[in-house]
Length: 347
Image (cartoon, rainbow, N blue to C red; front, top):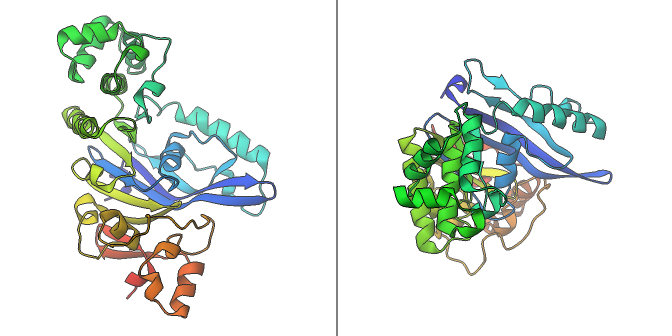
């Protein structure tokens, strides 16, 4: 798909944490493409870099140096905006703390035109993300202001009604504080606040955290219905591959900071042994007593971060194993819209 048709095009993201004189890569060569009116999923276990990746898109990286390589183009206006065009990583030999801090401040200012207005986020644990000192209606009012609308109770009730509350319940919820809501009510209130900003893209960072299994499914179905109804695009983050099955069109699989596989969600879910070895473990295709990712490997190794847990790696000869450990696997296309990063697929 041409870049101009994408709302978000993230390419080659590397995120770094400085520890004294040493720098550790937390994310490397991550990428993401978001077409309009499309739901994209990012899946991976804790520590894989999912939240850091979307935080970089929003310009919400709290540490230095943070983003040290990559390109981010936002296509919400007629002219695509390369928001990282002046990143200080252009000279990688020297880490200048002052340059990084100045650039992050500049990026924060630049992203104000997108955050809330073009891109909104639902953080983990809905109750925590709500302002405990404001009633729900006042928080919807703030989002309406972002959308350029006059804040009024009728508009607030409209969005609460559209997000699963009936007329009587919406009036009651509007006058309540977050601590008075149940987990499911808080999740719907957050959706009302997010959608009322009328941003084109909604990022949902593990939106079902803390909910029971039944409510998790209901919440994801509800979010999908709302996105379809209002023709929004979405990035949905999850540690559970199957929770994304019915709710996303495209899926990215991340492990220890590296994007290992990308393709249509239906292909990522196929049980044919043709996916990345890590994806196969997420699918449950590889029968093993090991916990997925149990053996920890540094994120800043040169090669594949999954090699220590890989069932294919164990079958390779010493030369092939050395390549897995020391050389980052390239993208290998399985189809026009599907690739993996794994030396085992090299022809």
